[in-house]
Amino acid sequence: MSCSKYMPAAPVCLIENDDNGKLRVKKEAKDILDGINEPVVVVSVVGLYRTGKSYLMNRLAGQQSGFALGSTIESKTKGIWMWCVPHPNKKGHTLVLLDTEGLGDVAKGDSKNDSWIFCLAVLLSSTLVYNSRGTIDNTALEKLHYVAELVENIKIRSAEAADEEDSEFVRFFPSFTWVVRDFTLDLEIDGKKVTDDDYLEFALQLKKGVSRKINDYNLPRECIKRYFPSRKCFVFPFPVTSQEDMTRLEILQDQDLAQQFLEVTGHFCDNMFVNSAVKRLKGGHIVTGQLLGRLVEIYVDTINSGEVPCLDNAVVVLANLENQAAVQEALKVYRRGMEEVKNTLPISIEYLTCEHQKFSRLAISEFTKRSFKDEKMEYLKKLEEAVYMCYVDLLEENQMASERKCRDLLKNLFSDMNKRLQDGEYSQSGGYELYCRDRDAIVKQYRREPNKGVRAEAVLEEFLKERKPEANSILCMDNKLTENEKQMKKEKEKAALLEQKFKEEEEKRIEMERMKETEKVRHEDMVKQMQEKFNKELEQQQQEMNRATESKLKEWEEMLKRGFKEKAENLEGEIKKLNNEKECSSGGAIFKDYVMPLLSPLVEMVPNLLMQRSMLKSLKMGLKH
Image (cartoon, rainbow, N blue to C red; front, side, top):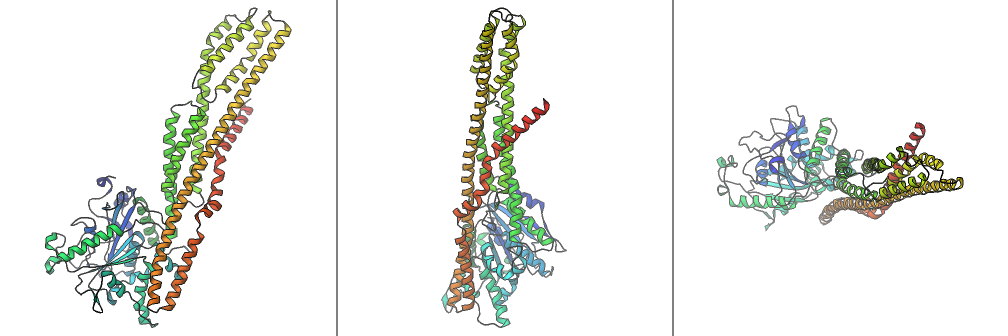
């Protein structure tokens, strides 16, 4: 991929947030994403306005500047801005950085709009970075009330109870990183030095009790633990010593910044590059830049319509769009290959079926790369039907090309004989024997000619049948032969025509058998490809569930350790539900019992289509006569 063609040299606005609180996807950013066909790792940063979010994103982009930093109390980032850069660690991947509008901007005064910005950052990212200043105390966590509102702003399924849904957020939400800026305290708990991560876990500890005050205290902490599969923390010291320099971070060189600040920045960037996962949809399907662009549009349109974004609905809409595109791209692969074959007609049925098998395999492979959630094989069937129609059309074109070539060949071969016929050479005594000798010599010469195609014997049979009255006329006029000999010759002619008819029927039978065998091999190959895709998707879903199970097990152990018996029991039920779901999704059984019956009818499609067309052709010919 050319960075200059697809990737901007600077950030662009992805989602515009106008003065009326309406969200709009910007065409320039969408076009950039449409040009990225590789997997994306999406890192979003959220936080209160004027807390230095943009500086971190610039460093992740490997640049000194890019995202606007600003140096006043005014929020510089409006909406969501995007910067796509080649991933520094993952070859063939794009790092998509999303810098969000600062939450709690006093000039805006719209908390609902803030909630949607936060919600979109969660929905679009594979890693969510929350940026704050000072310490992780109760005030800081109260400001993160947006996390507690996620259950109201995001649905997993179109119809399910919220309390059932929020237990599943951990399966689909991004990893969570809390960045604490301008941290001045010692990292110690009870007199012992601790890590940044220990500090975060300490700050997220729950209090025992059932009072409203304790519930309010626990709520944001519980949501962070419950919704995000993994947590990480980085505490940054002040970057510079003077307040004046704090407003000039964008132009300061590394030597002007505090060494410890630079070290933490390096650790933060390295962690993002190594541990931020590829963005995936619910169900585990890998997201490309193109898919991310469509996902942005789906979520923004849903929010603007007044509805709540639903993961299932988004995946269904996205799958339908992507599967339609997958069918078209796969069909292009088949048509391009077969167009080259078409230019060489007429060809043997062996070569034609071999090429059909090769390019249809490539088409299925192209389809499986892009398609997903085609559970009823609806789009695979559409592709197969379109491929079959192209193939059947090509079979007919090959027959017609063969027919034209054979008729032209016979016409040329019989030109001298036709002249003798006109000159009356066969109308004299012994003319019939001369006629048969010349005709049989021409038939032998015709059969020796190569590359006549699939209609060689059929055209010869029709040609000889057309000349039968001519042969009978010459036989009747030949006074050298007795009536008995003439009758014997007639019987011999009849037998020869029957033999030629048999050769034609045998040619058709062999042709049909070859096509059936080709379709059988194709079907087996298609089943193999679909099973590999099915197993891969199942593995992705298993990874999704494993990630959720590991997170819940960790929380369960902590709840038990800290004496939260009821919460531990609830988690136990959720873990059991996940394990049951994993056990039920037996790949081989599901594929055999559900998927195979959907694929099986496809193997008879070409022979059936050929039979239907043959019957229709015969019917038309009958009506014509």
